[in-house]
Image (tube, rainbow over all chains, first blue to last red; front, side):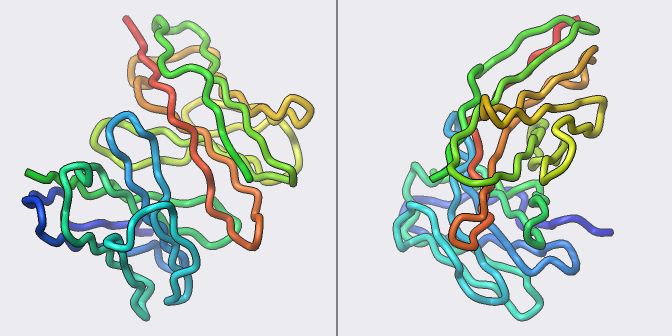
Amino acid sequence: EAGVTQSPTHLIKTRGQQATLRCSPISGHTSVYWYQQALGLGLQFLLWYDEGEERNRGNFPPRFSGRQFPNYSSELNVNALELEDSALYLCASSFHPQPQHFGDGTRLSIL
Amino acid sequence: AQSVTQLDSQVPVFEEAPVELRCNYSSSVSVYLFWYVQYPNQGLQLLLKYLSGSTLVKGINGFEAEFNKSQTSFHLRKPSVHISDTAEYFCAVSDGTGGSYIPTFGRGTSLIVHP
């Protein structure tokens, strides 16, 4: 069984640009979660998508957005990038109430 | 609201020694509890989970954890660690409040195993 896959592995952007991160969940999982893991801050919940709908979002500004496609894959978009957006972005999938399975993340670096 | 406290940010230990990583949570309802491990430049891998039933949970790589409802704790233990266990460990709690099973993660404990 293929795990959660994320692309790209690394992404380098400059301030003010836009970034798009992608995630493919485990087959059969309808929920996709996005987390930001900045240095020393642990995992901060960003967004939860289930059955194509945004179900919940964490305490992040609106420039963090995303969507879930009919095949349950998901995209995270970050607009107007700021230096503090530099982090590892993790995607996870699950089928409630089972635990989440994580991808290896996208390392976003803002120069 | 649920919250998780990992009491130690860093735990150094010698190879083959036992280790305990502490985790306390707060929640007003029944909970699901998890431990994850993160190796450098990787995502999180599930070590073990408590959903219901026996309070002693066995996971992968020889780890186990005990759910203690009265002390609201879910400490992770291993009787003999290896160098390869050096990693970041995260405790997480999910209580399904409002139909949401989004887990709350602790800030992590860095386990450093010395030869």
